[in-house]
Amino acid sequence: MLCRSIAAVSAIVTVCLPSAGLASAPAALGPLDRAATATAQAVAGAAEQLGPAPASPTIDAVALTGCDVEVLQKLASSDRTVMQWIIVSVPQSAATAGTLSIATVRSGRWVCALSSTVAQVGRQGVRPILQRRSGDDTTPAGIFPLGVVSTPQGPISFFGNSADPGALGTYRRVQRGDCYGANPNTPGYGHWRVDTRTCTGDDELLANNVQAYEHAALIGANTEPNVSGDAPGEIAYAAAIFLHRTTYASGNVPKPTSGCVSIPHDQLVTALRSIDPALNPRFAIGTRSDLFATPSRSGLPVR
Image (tube, helix red, strand yellow):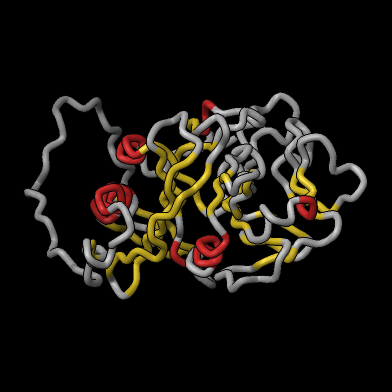
């Protein structure tokens, strides 16, 4: 029996309690001498379906007449978030010409929005982006998003010296001084600026290419926000890689590009009216065998 004295208002009252009624400090834990064991077997809860799994868009050869169905099947299975593929295929890496087609998801199935058309690429062919360097006259090979660049008008993916043909995104009509930076290891490399004075060297004063840049879409090979080559010591992989209009030498012979992809006027207008930023579009560029082997998200290292 333990007793405690409690001060009352006018007297001291002694209260006695059983020892068991008082809390005592827990005994110190000793070292573990055996492995922990479960007291009951774990049982999985009931599976809950939060919503129906989205069905993959149908690949129908008839709806895809004019597009390469086999390549599209490979690309579509590699990244199911992409609802539009702009496929640029060349017969071999040294080729300066190939084909371009656009496959798009409409009403739950893939359709050929632009049938295969002749496309010109770099005068030195195509080369994987990580092996490429600015000025080597090759077109970057790989999988690229639709490019976005900041301009005084705001972010854009489409531009041209002619009026907007009906592009499905913001279009900038080229203005005096619009310059796309392409001088490696300078702050302007891979960026748009308005500059009538120092747009020199490899920089492109867009108004000077009236025919080629009648209309254009940006191919997202080394574009904002992470442009490699706009600071000293960085690798300058690519700048000013566009889909634009084909230009011609004497005799109406199509000219290869310095690294862009070009197609004829009518097909270019159709392309700008088809490429939809809301569909998470991707450019797939390379030989046909490359397109079968290219990882779904090839690109540059993130700095």
